[in-house]
Length: 607
Image 1 (cartoon, rainbow, N blue to C red):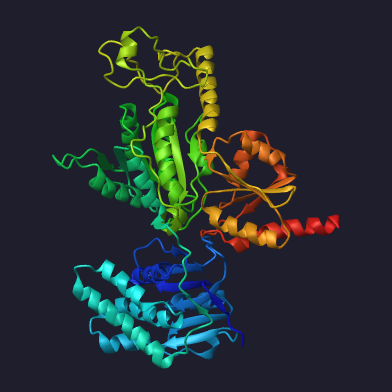
Image 2: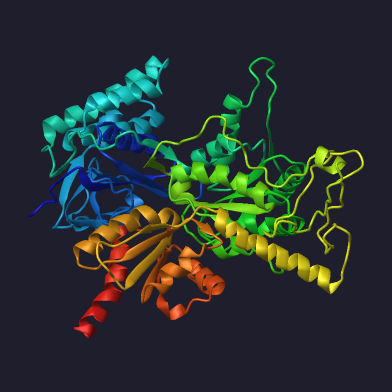
């Protein structure tokens, strides 16, 4: 029987039970390969309950540097009897099945076209450890030890990771090293090693860092000047606020006095949290909240108030599967429409679309600038795949002494000099009015902030012309926003082509690999990665330059497709939907197959 043969180019998937302590062991496996200089891209697929349900951890090993999900599994570490049949079925022919054979399974539970590696993990741990919890926890480390022999992972690297993790806790360090060696000794004595898939030290990581998107966004908020965060816990965004608190404790505490120069409030619900953020923004603080789709649904009335009263706020939406509670621990890009048009009436919001943790950092800081400059809510549209999974990305960059863009804020001196102040008056032709902050001047520059209609001087008015003036000015401001948001990134094909593809966000790493595979098959596409909404003029120009443009997104209803058609007046027949929405991150194979299925019949017809 043939076996999969690959060096530094394979996928290992761990099937475990949630709450078994496997997550840290599986992460250790991924980091050890990374420390050997080989790029990895791990993804944790976990249930929404605390423990007991199936969980998976997939590690893509790619010396070529592909960081998206490839599709397919070369080795399955099957530790969960509940999901055994599905896990075995997922293996590619010639792949490797590693399992605990303490209790023998009938031949019907295996496949003839895969290689089975059995190891009595439970028996080994029962013989060494008396405590039931230790037996469970160290079983995970034992299989990491065995895998280090089978895949030729340097054990010294793993032990160094242990040393970093348990510095000052020598007892824990020694017990973990012991479990690692138990696995290695058994594998050397009883298993055939190495396998056809293995790791070889390389130097392909460079200066890239390994971080999750939620931590990156939180740090971006710190560097971007946010001093207020109000939030309510919700998966998968909670760690944004938690990381913000950690970073503020490091960077926002006066070393001399111990004074905290930040305010973080865990509110009683999402409605209260967004209300606090709106109040802080009105007072001149840079404020944000972090939430997910259900939270945005509850926040929409306050978001509409911030839009119409023109109060700067930032909302970091770590998207998950919906509708309703949906799939709380699965990823999607399904909040585009709900955020772009959040609230009732004619309302439009700025959306930023980061592709990785580096852009989560960059876009979070940028969102705070844009919110002040535009005096409006700005959404950072990340998702669970970026937010909760660690990813290799470029180091974060920041210019020391960089000035924040506070936008059009009228000073006391300008007011005292007699400058005309109309809170909702367009004096510069860009739709953005001037504002004052509370207490700027004792007698001048005050106004009443309301959610109802008003004239350019903030005086209550239900006159049709005043309402039309205000609404058209807001529309003009939205067009101005298109010139200020991060611009799309265009990647031309190596040769002229009538085909294009538009994608965004966490689809990016899989899309990059798919483009390379398609080019190898003779299918060439010009590619545009969207980085924000509203769409700059380059987006309709890109579409107009092609006969057909694929729009790749991770939701059922083609929400980006709808935005493009609705906002740009594009003929929908020119935009070809490529939709992935099972809750797992999109794969390069899915994209390649979807585009090939559409292109090949057309090529055959033309021939």
